[in-house]
Length: 509
Ligand code: 6YU
Image 1 (tube, rainbow, N blue to C red):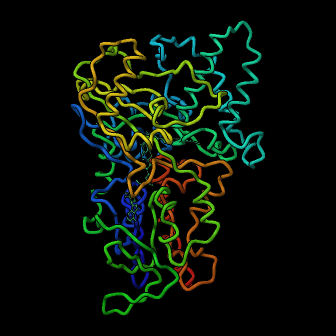
Image 2 (tube, rainbow, N blue to C red):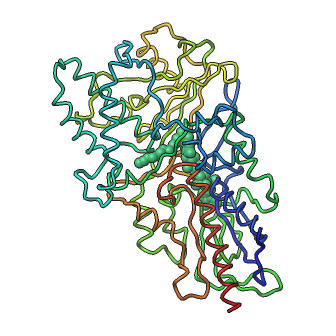
Image 3 (spheres, helix red, strand yellow):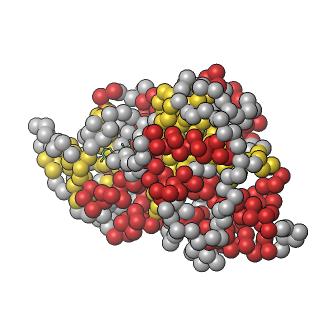
């Protein structure tokens, strides 16, 4: 590895110890940069990668899967290198499977009247939906001149047109078709971390790239990746419980040592401490930036950056883990999908969170195998309903879900869960939601603007690259994922490395 040869090693502060921050530190350290500090507001590393004990085993509070575990995916590459995956996940067959970012459909679904709906009954709508979604991602809509502003509007318009052509469909069947389409849109909300697909921009939808490979999990928890990434780095570069209050840039700040060094950036902490730096890599979640961008930077951010922070959405997707004494599901069941027969995406429904929040739950993943996890279900819920759920009591959630499961499975004596654990990403003060997704009116360019450093290298200033931006929301094609976050951290580390390499070359000319 090339060691940095600047006469004085630049001081680099990385804000946030999620996968983006750690990958930036890894890259800089491996290139010889030694004056590094990673400051983290909470008491633990990992950010939105967080594994905890529940039932008989481990559950993921944040990221669950490696999306697209195949050779191009840097998280997959690292996980293989560290020996963190099982043989099936690493097999060539697994890597070759194309899922287009969607989980496989379950063999049966459950309806709100307690009936089982077969795979074949749902198939025509699912196939139609997939073809419309593929169309929504087409290049021709990237300019923002699409037929609809949002993915939701586009799907509904196209689906209504197509469904009109379907023959021999009676009233009951039409009702079910609409209910299935509504369930698919709710699933998409969980995938995008959005309240409604009407809030997801058509112009940017196709920017997201899925990689091949059937999504896989970490047998020893996603956190095993964070531990392995941090292991070769010196412990003393990490500083926990250090929430940054404000980044002062474009300044001249005297260092504490006797060298008399002057730094362009000063990081001010919430507890009053201060740290001077040459470069700061900001990896805090977009949700945090949305709430704090006005006071987090001094001088304030340029208007183009503020526009990006506003246009890129940051919604909530939460999980509800339930542990049962005995399973009420069949041993081969891996997902319990809920279809509300009275719902339709074409109906105009007034949002009543108190009355209806649980209708947004799309279903429950069965954690397999039970010998490893116990009898545990993981429910998925996105949007405002998910944020509302965070403020309810455990008992309230348990009661509602027990009734819900009894109703859908037609299994009235089904026992109530003995334990519940909910994620609360919207209430997390240092995240304020789950992950980013381009909103209506947002284009891929907004993501690139968010990723631009301040001041840029081509601007004539005393010191460029004072504030750099990484984190999942800054990756144009892999936003919302751990691999997007990881690549963004490397990207910003490389920006600094290239800057000093170019400077060294110029000084030799
Ligand atoms: C993935 C998956 N996954 C489920 C759920 C969540 C997320 N993701 P971090 O937040 O980690 O780090 C920043 C740190 O900064 C943090 O520690 C803060 O405490 C700290 N900080 C904040 N303010 C500070 C301050 N003032 N001072 C100091 N420190 C401060 N990704 O690949 N697979 O299965 C899921 C899922 C419930 C919440 C996920 C998944 C998202 C990842 O977790 C996330 O992107 C990265 O961990 C972020 O890392 P980071 O370092 O950037 O930030 C249109 C279209 C749609 C296409 N979308 C595809 C869907 C893909 C997303 N799938 C998600 C699904 C699940 C289940």
